[in-house]
Length: 141
Image 1: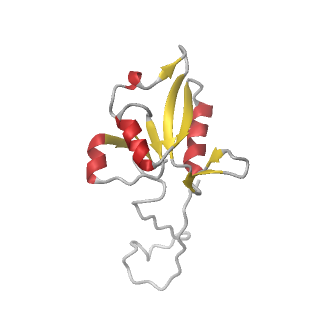
Image 2: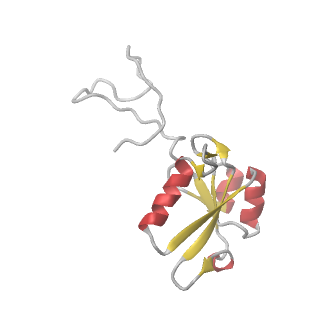
């Protein structure tokens, strides 16, 4: 998940019913496949389903999703109206000083090179080899 949370006092923006903490999540809901409204009018997508899985595995956490523009999400985060932005955010100099990001975003940054079996003649993407490469987004388990 690419999202961020502010460094503000979490108690200001977290509802608690003695056991369950509700975290408010801002997302556009228009960036398929990461966050969008499906044919059944339900918010879904990679970012949303990751948070739902976190919630499922942690019974003391609840996420409440709010769709809004990205600009509104940052305003809401800064004003403690939301706790997280789930919207494939990019780190930049301004944001890195203000917000906490996931350690590694799911679709940016590091280039991963996978080779078949015991092949050791390809060590970097910069080497001049005659091979085909496919670009994909997702997880490999």
